[in-house]
Amino acid sequence: MIPCTDFIPAYSELFKTLERLGGVAAVEDFWHHLARTYLTDLRELVRTHGIRGCWLYWSHTLNEEAADFTMELDEAAGTFEIRMHRCPSKGRLLEFDHIEPYHDYCRHCDVLYRDILEPLGFEYTYDLSHCDEARCRLLVRRRAAEQSREAEPALPSTDSGRESH
Amino acid sequence: MTKLVMRRRAADNRYLHKDFHGALSCGIGYLQEHFGEDAVRQYLRRFALTYYAPLREQLRARGLDALEAHLRELYEIEGANAVFERHEDELVVRVAACPAVRHMRERGFPVAPLFHETTATVNRALCEGTPFEAELVVYDRTTGRSVQRFRRRSA
Image (cartoon, rainbow over all chains, first blue to last red; front, side, top):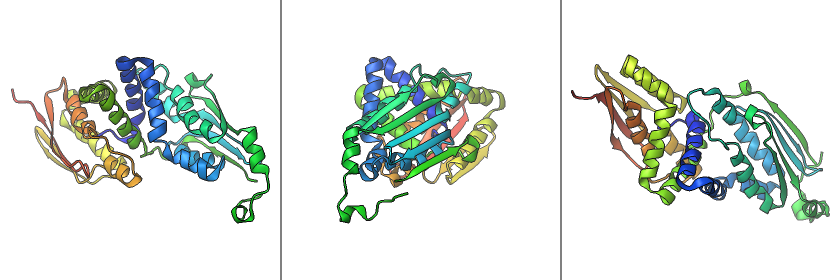
């Protein structure tokens, strides 16, 4: 079997295989497929908890992936940010000298999470400019229309569990 | 409204994200559906030949000791119950339940029909260009229970 600790090079090789067989379109189609069928946790968490769902999702995954990061949630401002100081996936790929990473490996994070978050009313900005150093920045911002909707007084029955700090 | 900050360094956590098994299974399923079964086997073979090239070199140099060490570490990391039977020119590994399949079943991720090729094809590729050959003797698709045999090729 392939242990989960060897998944990243397997994933990179999968992207290479897909590009060889069906071009970049096949790789991108797979990323869209993954967003639809595999990233259901993120979608459900954001549907249920709003932007806090991002915090809940990445708190789990980034810790299990032993990432080096700073993550910030500001519910009042409607923003969620990850500053990845050392991406465990790209960092791992860069450490290997016997395999060549897929040339556009990091872009899957742009496609996957955009597919999930934009239809749910969020702007998604992903800065890949330092991905060759395994650094990136991800910013999720609630759209203005969603902000004003959430700022409206909520019905008592739905507001009782809301935190206020 | 809440404002939260989390700062973590790599050393703060152990690297073990088992949901990756679900993503790999999703990839294998996609590859089979769009490009056929052979594409799945070619992909896994190519991955194993390149990524595990240092292990294959060790297998050529040290024999089955190298492979046994690799598999023991792998199943220990994944927390699997694996029993190793070792003879001079043969290694048999009995895995009570594949930890990847178990995790996917628990989490509700679909298990790709060809997911067993992550064992069968990868093991065969590990042995390519070495004096050994691999066989997936038993595989239960529901649990991933398996018996894997590696032995020296007959002359």
